[in-house]
Length: 84
Image: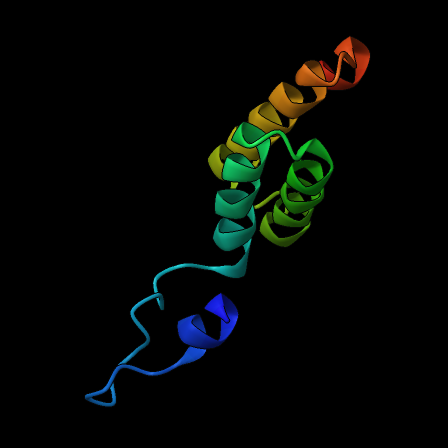
């Protein structure tokens, strides 16, 4: 339902209210609350998706997503996986 709402154009024919968000940002933004809610599997899945979308051309964003992914792995007790 949210995905459909995001894709709808604005009533005046302009961009969607969410047009400034990229798919990678949506994936990252979805992963973080999932992590906070304790759904670490879904959080890690979304963060991996964000990494795949952002690629290496956006270094700061890539580093931020990697740090968040490390936090999820640390919460799982995977110290080695959290520190690549």
